Amino acid sequence: MATMFRIAIFCMIAVFPTPILAQPAPPPQVVAMPRTMTSPIMVATIPVRVTLSMGPDILWSGNLLVGRASARVSIQEAADNPASCDGETSGSETRSIEITIGRYQVDRLSVSARYSRPADDKACPRGTRQISIQQQLVLTDGEAVLDGDGGLRLTLSREQRK
Image 1 (cartoon, rainbow, N blue to C red):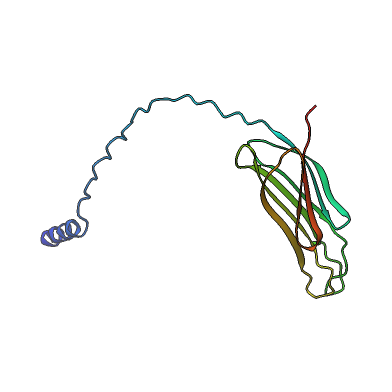
Image 2 (cartoon, rainbow, N blue to C red):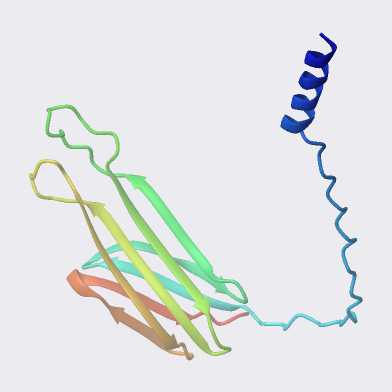
């Protein structure tokens, strides 16, 4: 019996070897960096008068202040809800307008305007139609008119500060 006990202990030692303890990781190295004081670049805001139209209809008109960060207008509104393919009205019909004006140099602007609406056709399933303008320009004291496809027009002018 004693021999079987010794064989069992030997088998347990052979099957379950003692774990090898891993060495602890060295502490992280801390490198001192000189502190620099930088002042933010002051960029004056530019008041821009914006009008987005589609043919004779004005989609949006207002003023945007363009500074260091881009100025953005995003509008989503419910559109007319005609009957869907199965005869019930659909609740997801929207039209949207997005206008973004950013500065990438002191006197240069990057302009993006997008108009999206439900399709007018009677196709089933319904879809959307979208049109956009993307342009880089220098906006002086005058007016800039950007004409897109389908009658989309974006008019920009600098507002005079009082």
